[in-house]
Length: 223
Image (cartoon, rainbow, N blue to C red; front, top):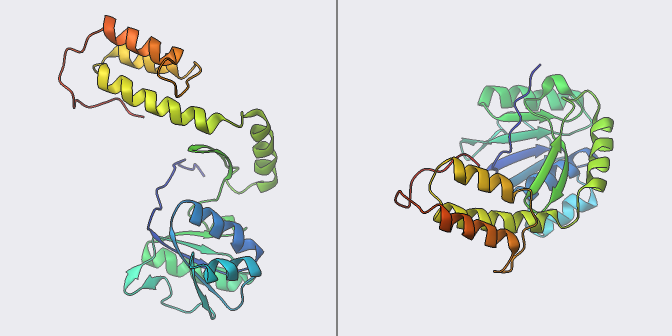
């Protein structure tokens, strides 16, 4: 099976997790990190999940999953995770999600998944996701540790400054091959927040020798 790798915006999206034990905890944390609105249904919940509910970060319903739970006030959940220790319950969640058109992940049951949770290395807005298509989560975790050890701790801060500089370049430079080349050059250089940063000096010098010949507001190349 060929998977389509994407980074999905979940901000304010309604997401359902069925189960509230160790299997569910990391999935809930991942959804919260993406600013999703998370509802959890489980007959019992571990201390961490109860604490999240008490803090108002999730909605917790302490009851068994039942037919119709993939809708909230008549609106289907955008995404669901089945993370109980009962395969029959997980597959019931999968079947209803499929019928409702919701994305579904049945934890540790690859045939009953529309998507997989990758192992992720994070540095601020920089994310590197690793998937083995469910074949070996242990391998994905090992690769994550190796990449995490190689990636500088300040890579997230560097990316933020690179993004700021990119916006400056887009304002100064017309859409052309020269702009593409300067953006790729800057991605290979150290960028800092100071106005006299060598990379910013390079970008401005380039703009001065390649003046804009079209109005602001034209389309930009893909990110």
